[in-house]
Length: 113
Length: 392
Image 1 (cartoon, chains in turn brown, blue):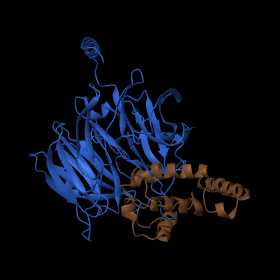
Image 2 (cartoon, each protein chain N blue to C red; image 1 turned 90 degrees about the vertical axis):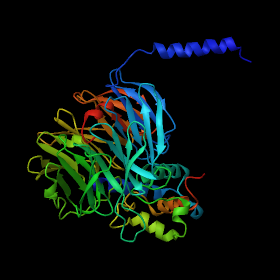
Image 3 (cartoon, rainbow over the protein chains, first blue to last red; image 1 turned 120 degrees about the vertical axis):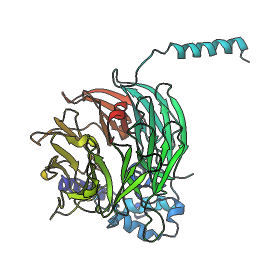
Image 4 (cartoon, chains in turn yellow, cyan; image 1 turned 135 degrees about the vertical axis):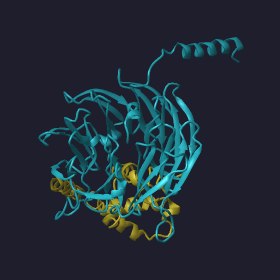
């Protein structure tokens, strides 16, 4: 099951890579993808971090809580997870652009008041 | 604008409507948590309908519910530390307090008089009078080594003899609170139970407490008939030699997973349901399933085991034959199946389809979908019959 999912995911990626895009858009997920990612943030990240990012089994991800944490280290945490904790690496499900977009959303403050 | 006589007429009409509401029991009632909107639906399983929606329950990101022993009141534990007592008959909030900053769930004592809530922040357990919601006892968990905060509490369960038992995720402990002598509990601490206990189940007779471990392949068992014997590690090293897969949602353990002489539990980081002999507590099988299991629930007659999964396999539900351990059905109810609840005698299975914004009622014998009920991002489903189950 796990391998076949990777195969499907890989296929999805290669289809995406065939789509024409300008370099300006290359690092931003499409509007439809952004909606999916925001849903994922609230519902799936929210399972541990709280629907309002106020924390749970995972730490709070509100603006106050992540203030001072470098963007790159947040991206690394989402990408690879944190060994020894319940935080999984999301790179099997999300690509670099997805993860960067999610981290930027948090750094802008989520949810917006 | 509106004539007083008209107001009076409306008022008496409303009163009349209330008075004419037929008498009913609560044994076929339940609640559905609508987690994004902080609301609760009251449902009934005889006609499979929605009776009411209760709003204003705060952040229900991770909400769980227990019931008073008369099955009239539901106690809802919310993420924001809210503890809300909902009157199922009057269909309204009876009392609501904010008792902590961030809570995970709770339990009701054997005699129905105490409510215990497990908190992440501040880490510990608070115990309340079930009638008034006044604080009875406050038991902070063990502080972390750096003193920054206390350990987070998980898996708060009621045990026979007016006791509560729970585990400490960060400090790898299990605590047993004994309220049998009054409202100041005797505390028994079990240390080094295993790395990161994440949830626990109590066998339906209330004898064995089994905590799942996130930080290692195994479970920690305590015999409540013989607490002096301490903690026993069971199914140790079940995933040995296999790389752990990422876990995108923490599994849950509930008493229902004990099916006769077998106990079915989710593996962590392996797409398997593990089977143990309920006498020897040795692993007897590992059943390959479609993803990381979250809930592994036995139909009350113990003939089938229903399993749902973590993201990204949460659109599937698999049904396992408890005798042959074969997967007899794979259902795809819709996007993001979060929870499943059987009616007490197992004639219906209700499941929540979060991203489909509906609750579905299935016949677990024919495996046919019976009904769809709209709900706003539904998560947990809890039936009032839990009032009479130890450890649920």
